[in-house]
Length: 418
Image (cartoon, rainbow, N blue to C red; front, side, top):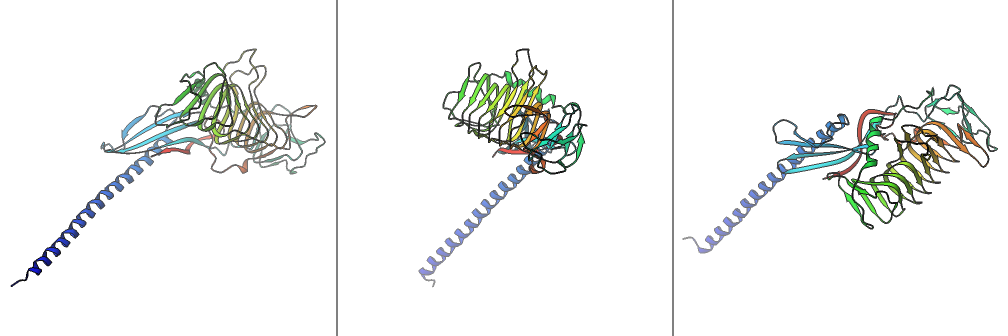
């Protein structure tokens, strides 16, 4: 006869076995769900990479409107592609979709540098030589006038640099600078007539590139930005002077104005475009990939000189350029202060004025150079200037606006992802 305690023991064993079996079923279920989730995510990641490659390999005019399509024609794996102009660069947005799951990435797009066109220095040939004085150093290929390059004695300073004068290849320049890309200039010029909303003082804005651009319009009243944090898909517009205080934080923001004033000590990443002037105070820091540009499509006899002025001990990591469609009586000028550092590219349609101890890691394209002391203005003299294209990062990417860019495109910067 079976004892009653044995029945209890059987029940307990059956309960334990049931718990173990149900646990195994639950583990198998969650493992399968996690495996499917990981499999879908891997598929989404592969599809996202394919979409990014498609966007990088197509012309700039492609996908200006958001386009959705299936990668394999079965309707299960869809991606959306969208490219928008963002200053001298483009921004790409790619989304990968499988059923209800979506991931996306936003990134800026830039061009690689064409090594055949790249040079530390390009100065147009106006039938006179380039003169060097002081501790001037030129390292990299240089396009020079047919009259060549020579040493000079200026401000009681003889040339005290490398005897080769140019540490690199010496090539012959043309009478004119290689032109900027007209299609990109046209796109930039349109933004000077954009209208938008009025910004409330004290606001902080962070706008995703998945959404329409937040346009902040100050119209024809001078305005000063103070104590603001601006990030992302934001465009500031003014028909007159816009002042940016050092208390303003900018990250990937674009500004279009008639004149722009940047106060001393500013730090940020932005693209500033003006039709008249850009004035930057001392000790300002513009991080890569920033841009300071003058774009002027209309000039009159009364037009002031288009000018970019950067104060002493400042730095710009990116691009500085001037462009006028029809040169005015006073031609455009870029003026660097003492101990300024530019890491990137300078394109001066006419004059580039350099002061003592300027450092350029990258490239200069200029029609002529200016150097002014207390008594005299010198043309086509470089005095105590360091110009070294080899010090620029090998990962540096240019804009399609500039003449040294190639057709190959790469990702400049990851902006958003989810």
